[in-house]
Amino acid sequence: MSARVLQGVVVSDRMDKTVVVDVSRRKQHPLYRKVINRSRRFKAHDDANACNVGDVVRILETRPLSRGKRWRVIEILQRGDVAEVAPDLIGRDLEAEVQAAPRAESADEPAESAEPAVAGETSGGETP
Image 1 (cartoon, one colour):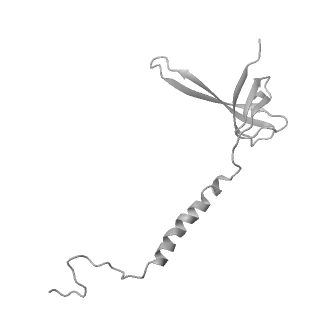
Image 2 (cartoon, one colour):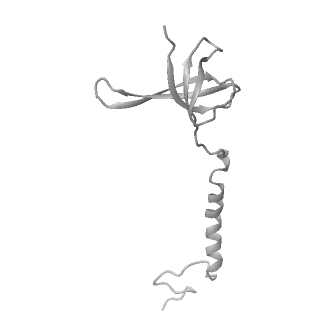
Image 3 (cartoon, one colour):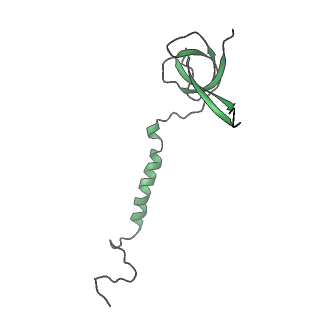
């Protein structure tokens, strides 16, 4: 019996010496014949902590290493290009620009009365 070898993308590397690999495959629906994308996540042993998020790796089925880990990373096929930015920082500069823009426009405009005049009405409550 030969061990299975799969290829997938690393989606998490937060654990020590362990990565989560997402293996995707395309399958045709038996009745409707539409092609469906199916994916499964495997925990794999990465002894050197060499894998990063976004890397394409090849994993090998092995003996149980822990409760949920039954795979080993055998090679990194392609390094991933994933930005190292914390999620709470994404868009902060854009948010600051959007909030500052209305203030800048209002500073350029001259001050007008608090209530705009409605057509057909005169100010002061007088009727002609």
